[in-house]
Length: 214
Image 1 (tube, rainbow, N blue to C red):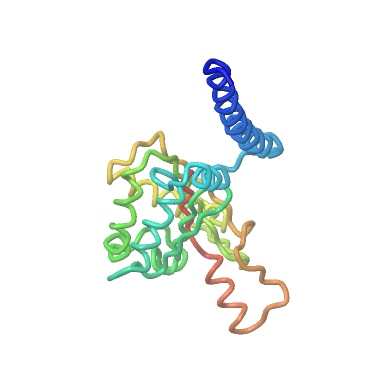
Image 2 (cartoon, rainbow, N blue to C red):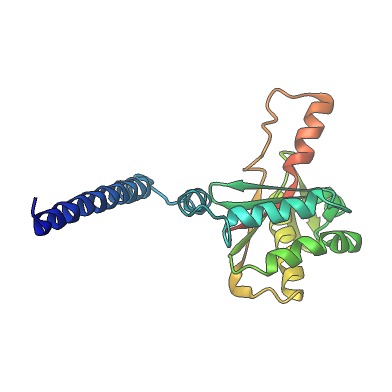
């Protein structure tokens, strides 16, 4: 075989390897984009999970933030009345209103502000948007207070607003914050059919302020 023919054959083999690798890459990208297109709504939590798998790194993602917040909450001294998980719509941090507020009040307890300080400090280092959601239990709440009728709706909204005011005092940009009051409409535990102690525990879990980091 002539030298020039051998060179051509070797080049052809190299091109075959290149085309195979390029083809594999195209298949992976095609699957990735199909996954995005088949979602009626692209959930940021799901997207960043896929992103971390594709890149092999969780750096600067909600996956990493979720782990950091969990370490703070479950570490020493830890933060009582707080839980965190990575949901489809972002990182969700649930704060027990029993720790944050007195019954029927929207004024944050001073001791709660101190315990939650490390958590808020970590969240502030990010550039994500934050929805502060107020949630109540299913017990009807009506109160006539200084010419205004208060209910679960207004109480949940006021509690969310109180947390926003505190975050603003920590110099969180207002453009990143949004307050929402959901009252009893989004329970984490269904109370139908529950009685006694189980019912009270479920209602306690449903009374919360959630920080949705997205």
